[in-house]
Image (cartoon, rainbow, N blue to C red; front, side, top):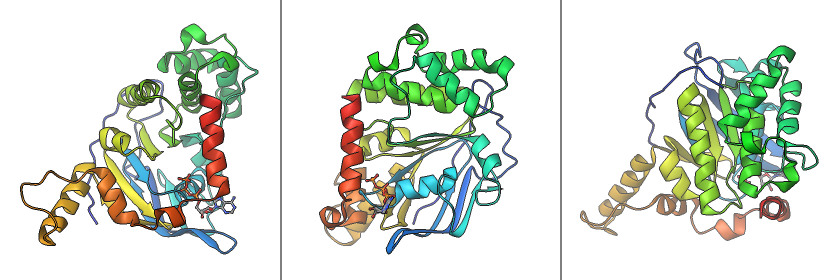
Length: 300
Ligand SMILES: Nc1ncnc2c1ncn2[C@@H]1O[C@H](COP(=O)(O)OP(=O)(O)OP(=O)(O)O)[C@@H](O)[C@H]1O
């Protein structure tokens, strides 16, 4: 498995302090989580370095959302250890929650509120001091280019605008770690690019760390510093997209199934190599499909 260090960039802005005390943004060791007999996460070891954009990839049902929910403290940590900037997610839930913003797959904005009201609600829930609230809400809306639409009902927003609004909600409490579960699912290519451009501009301004799940290999390739391929609750490959492609290319040359001059495999080839041909058998269940379709419908 390929591992490497990522560079970091840091400045102050809408996000929180760049001081991370030297700890990894996320560190999981031996993380295990089961729903009844289904082991969703199985002895997972994972480190997300401070300042990087880290992509967690894998087929439906691989355990990505479950792992992320353990990191957010929305699920307990029944086995193993999860730390966020050094804080134990099992024992220091509030400290962890204060450091991260989470955009789940499901809709987290209220259609019956304006954009500004939605973000203000998150500012209150996450204890942004009352005297700073209005300014921080305005900053968060500006960071995702929604200032001009801030006082319109969210029900009038397009799918891409809703996703940007959800980003603003997650960013308003000056987070150091932004966690995004399939942030661009169901969006058209222009809206997808726009969501990523906004993530990246906030990241450049603040040095925040981003942990994202996606099924779009082109996005992982383009926007992630490192990716991990998860399958059946475990990490099977980890590295930069270039490293993973090169490693598969070398293996194919060694096995005689490709020549030296052949183009490098794509990240999608790496994905297929890891997940094998069992994708359709293992490819999620009613719950997975329903959640994807629900998201696609509401943004469509
Ligand atoms: N609430 C639940 N109750 C029972 N089983 C669950 C529940 N949530 C997830 N699972 C099961 O746990 C496993 C991991 O699911 P999880 O949602 O973490 O995968 P995922 O990689 O995020 O999938 P997707 O890409 O479809 O979002 C799957 O087998 C899934 O069916």
